[in-house]
Length: 91
Image 1 (tube, one colour):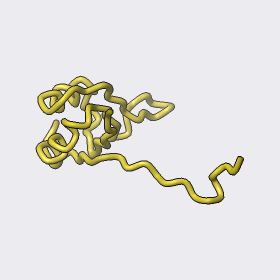
Image 2 (cartoon, rainbow, N blue to C red):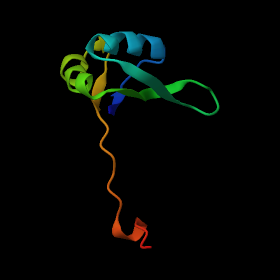
Image 3 (cartoon, rainbow, N blue to C red):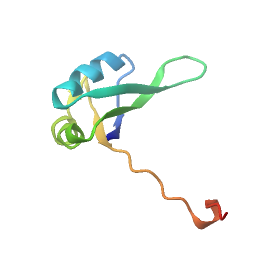
């Protein structure tokens, strides 16, 4: 099982590899994906990390508000939205 973590307040020069290296000591990182601007190709200062369940809690406690490239990054777990009744399918 894996969890998805939000990583935000990233400086423009921060790379996915830097984030991977920062988080790997706490557990296996499956992927690091930044949300990028369609026109400039630059990331918008945040992204998502998919990693093993057992390391996710440790990462949040250890890395949230850590300074990376001059900015205190934010890390927290992504909690999926619940679907409303109008979005459910009744079959």
